[in-house]
Amino acid sequence: MMEMKIVEKSNRMFEEIIQYLDEDSGNERRLIDKLNALGAESGDVFFANLLKVLSHLDFSPDEARAHWDSILKHKAEMEKGIHRCIGFRVALLDYFININRKVKNPKIVEIAFFEQTVRSALTDGLTGLYNKRHFNDTLGKEIERCRRYKSSSSVIFFDLDNFKEYNDHHGHIAGDLALQQIAGIFSSSCRMSDTIARYGGEEFAILLPETDKKSAGILAERIRKRIEKHPFEGMEGVTEGRLTISGGVACYPGDGENWEELIKSSDEALYRAKNFTKNRICLFYSERRTFPRIERSYILSYKVVTEDPAGDEQITTTRNISENGLSFECEEPINLSTAIVLKIKIPALEKVLEVLGTVVRTEKIDKEEKYVVGLQFSHIDSKTRNLMQNLLI
Image (cartoon, rainbow, N blue to C red; front, side):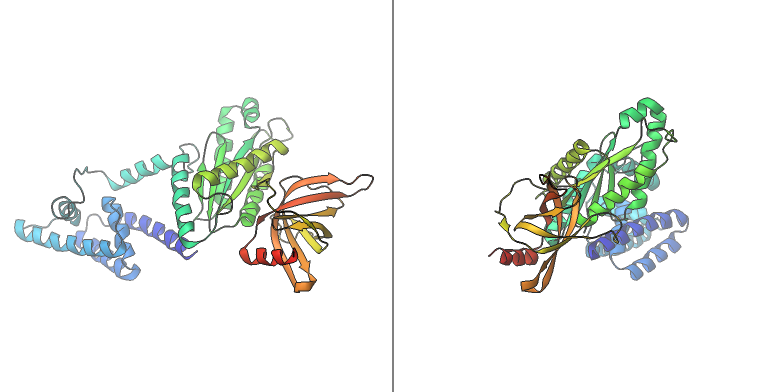
C-alpha cells in the first residue's frame, strides 16, 4: 500500500512539473530556483520526475539528483565559454548527447504535444480509458511487484450484455455514448491507483493493486448494479436492447502465477457469468476437488457477497468439509458462482473461522423444501488452512 501511495504522489508531481515548466518558461532564473526549491521540499524523487519529463529517460532518485547538479554546472561552463546566457534545456541536451551520452539521435518536440502523443498511444480514443496493450504491460509489472512483496492484486473482466441488440435498436451513435457513460461509471467507482482499460469492443478490464478477491467482487457487484440502473438512451419503458454487464474476478497469486494465467482465469469466470444468466459477477474457482470431504457438523453462518456490508446472515450447519470446500443445507437455492462469506464456529478450538467461498453446486433434496449447496473456498490464508486441517483429524 505504501508503494501505491508513492506511485500516486509521483504521478501528481509529474503533472505539476509540466505545469511549472509551462508557466515560467520565459524566466529561466526563477524557474531554476523554483525547481531547486521543489526538489529540496520533495526529495530526490522530484528530480527523477523532472528528467523524465525533460528527456524521457529513467533514473533512480540519487542518479537524477547527480545528473541535475551536473547539468546546472555544465550550463554555467557553457555560458562562460560563449559569453551569453543559455537555457538549462540546451545544457541538458548537450550534456546527454556529448558528455553523459544517454541520447544519440534527439528530436525536438514540444513537451505538451509529446505527452499528448504518449497518452494517445496508451488510451482508447472513444472512452479515454487505457487500451489493451497498456493494461497487459501494467498487469505484468504489477504481478512482478506482488511476487517481490508477497502481496495480492485482483483483475476484473467485464463484458456488456446485449450490446449488439442495443446498437441495432438505438443506433451506433447511442452505442458510442453508452460506452462513454460506462467508462465514466468505471472511473468514478475506482481508486487513482487502479488501472481501467477498454480491452476490446464492449469488453473492459480493471486491475486492482493490493486487493483481495472478496473486495474485488464487491466492487464488481457495485459497478454491475450502477450500470443496471443507469438511464441509457432509449431505455425509458423499453426492455428491448436493455444494457447490463457481466464480470469475472480473479486474484493473484491463487488464480494464476503470471499475467497471462490471471487474465485466463478472470476470462473463465466471465464466461461462466455470461453463460449462467448474464447481468452477474462470478469469482474464479477451480472445479477440481483435490481433497476428500469428511462428514462434520459445525455451526455455520453465511452471507452472500454484496456491496451492502449489513446484509442478512443465515445460520445453518455443515454437512461435510475438506481443506478446500464444504457443503450445507439451506431453505432457498443459491446460484452457481455466487460468492459467499462463511463463518464456521469451532467450539473445540474456541474460534470462528471466516473464509470466502464460491458456490459450485446447488441441488434440491428429494421430497423436502431444502437444498444442498456445495462451496469451494476462493481464498484461504495459511493460518486458517492449518486450523482447517486440525478439524479433519
